[in-house]
Length: 281
Image (tube, rainbow, N blue to C red):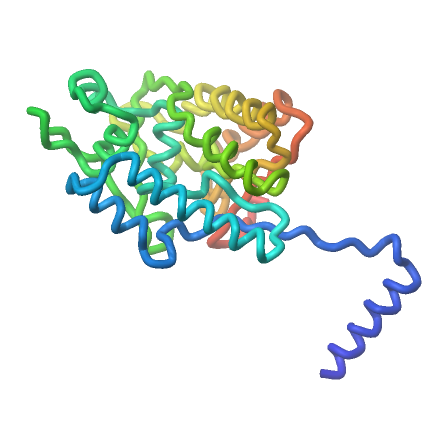
């Protein structure tokens, strides 16, 4: 108690003597729970899968959760509020769709199904697709690092190509900006962690070698967010908390040197969690 009282007096004294040097610390949030206070997202998804609600109703339920989450953080005085941290199913799967990393077996969902849309493709990748004469297996699911949550594992081939496919991140940023203004902070999973968290579908290649193919798409995404008005962008690289090979460390250096060279005029916040950086510092 005495230490606290002394510290309080010291801070007060400094604020009196050096008033111009005391600045309020900025606050931000890495991401916000997306299930909804009453588990609305789980219920809405299950109803959509069962054909009990329309895609429009599912999207309305998702919008309601997002806007409530943003408002809660706005009311709490958070300075930088995440957007694109919301997902209907899994943030890694969102990234796969954003980057166009869609396994070939799902092509019929878009080309042969009359009621096709991006959401049906998304859920087909997550849960499989067994209707309209099609029987397509889901992508593998595994634990998200050392948590009990799961993610959909990206699949890569030696000649894997990446291109901007889903516009979700831009739509959610625009929506967040209308509600939050400059406080809106887009969040994406970083290129190196995305590759490390995936798996190769062929023998004889290392998926981290795809780094030079994937980084240009990230640069395109970051540039577009900047043009839309983003001042801060959070890039999640949780794999920085793991033991990395030399090639993976080189991939980090390559990726962020390239991004830093090609994109200027905004703040890039590279975030990691779960453990210390240690020798990755």
